[in-house]
Length: 192
Length: 60
Image (tube, rainbow over all chains, first blue to last red; front, side):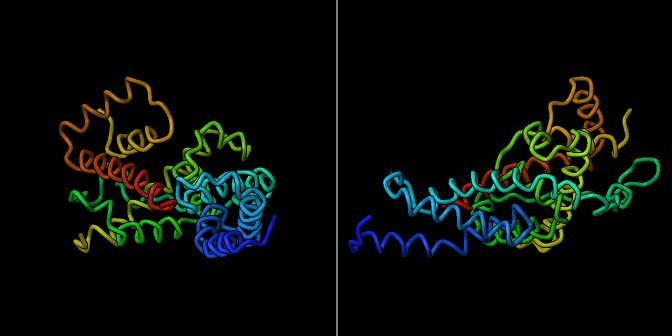
């Protein structure tokens, strides 16, 4: 490694992305110490192998790609603790709030208007992130593994040593909560 | 006929596993006469699109 101006510029650019990497690492792991480890490992990998950054993609895209691998490593390393801390969390059954005893909706469901550019709005993305952040720990972790890390259900079960039924119950709850949060914080306000 | 609760459960399960054809058909049948479950299914579909968009947003 030589300390050319180019190199220090590269270091600065990488370091500048630390906060955003930490944000997603925390969202995935729900544990600050593990998240910081994953981010440090990511930055270190990037500093050690600058030549593997092709330069034709954005630096952030490349780093998030590395981070996702490091996050899976962290999940593996801490899988035992992850499965035990999750027990007993969020026993509330959202279905009972949504449905009557004979299985009907308690309230009318809303049409979510979806203007062409809604999904491109940064404001919508921020509301979505805030809603994911509000999910209880294990639900949030599993939701992120499924939707952000894009792992298959059976991979998630294997990594965390949980049963498929357990996974589906948790994802079911996470999705209902997320729906409720989006309804309240975006669609109900007509903020489009 | 399945209930709304059952229909919503199957709709959500389909996001994370392959759902048997018989279940998919009973949801479709149910949705034909149930506006709430139709709207719920559209919400779930929109959430799926939103997740895909969000993945792009996070690394752009």
